[in-house]
Image (cartoon, rainbow over all chains, first blue to last red; front, side, top):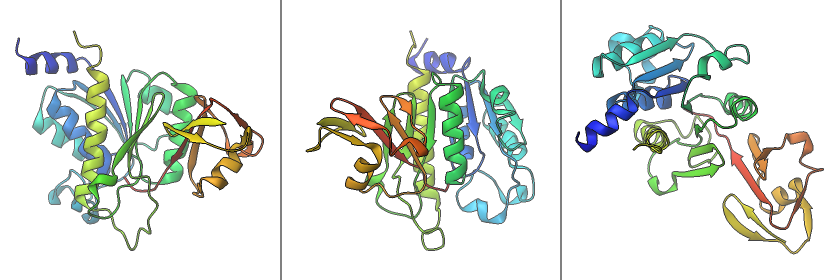
Length: 196
Length: 67
């Protein structure tokens, strides 16, 4: 077996949970599927809009469709053998357990800081031993050196953690996708930790 | 006291301090924060009463909208 075959066969039995299918979630999902992660659970309640196309992994002809359904289609075009569980729902205390219980790693890819905080606290309380990879701070362009990973136990935070004014500093593809790739890269590192 | 704040050693002249005082001194003035002391999540209402001592590990994470 070659090294890449060894990695993909190891990843093929792993399951990644992704909370949110926006700029972070859609791009993380694509990178994980390309790497060979066999099982993906993705939850989001939104539909694709025109303004999403500047950074999210969707296409013009998918505007108006549910994100999780459009994403599932795109992911299966990369690797049709991937098991993609697309859940069109808002993540709540009622469904979070069943969504992420069987995941080896969970990626937080929500939009608002309030939702991020709720989700992190819920995960720490209910799944303290499951790695949670969050994204925080990625607006604007330039300054790639400010993007970093902070670790606190099983919690990992990717981004610059800098507050900006949404109207003055918009979200653009490169920095959003860089943070998404930091999250995907960390997920692979954690999933491949016990690789033989 | 010397503590580990966000994975870095930090020295304070006081022997013990509340989480709120450390935040004031180190200028953490954001709205959405996650605070962990020695790995345990500390809710916002407990910050003024929670005492940090020499050798403790304090993690303060800033959550920003956008994703």
